[in-house]
Length: 136
Image (cartoon, rainbow, N blue to C red; front, side, top):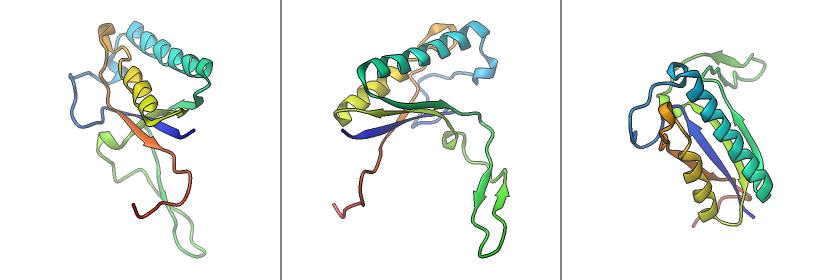
């Protein structure tokens, strides 16, 4: 079965369905409802046998690159990417088909935001490469 990474972004995607303030500006009960929903998704995927992993990430990041032979790694907190480049978290799923991965991503996108209204968040669906890329 193919594995897919369902990436959640900090305010990323083609265009916002509706404007939503950053989570640190939400009411505590809205944050709790959101996190409860995300835990529910993990439990649902575990029950169906499709769960591989899920993690949430902070927006803080460090950029690192190879510094060359005998040199220390180059480390910086910039350049700063567009907000759509910041990964907020992910689900890794092992599913029967691409269509099932899309179905799960759409469900995750219905997560509650401020006032309990669905976020309609864009979820980036990426298949995990299982072999060398082909020319097709």
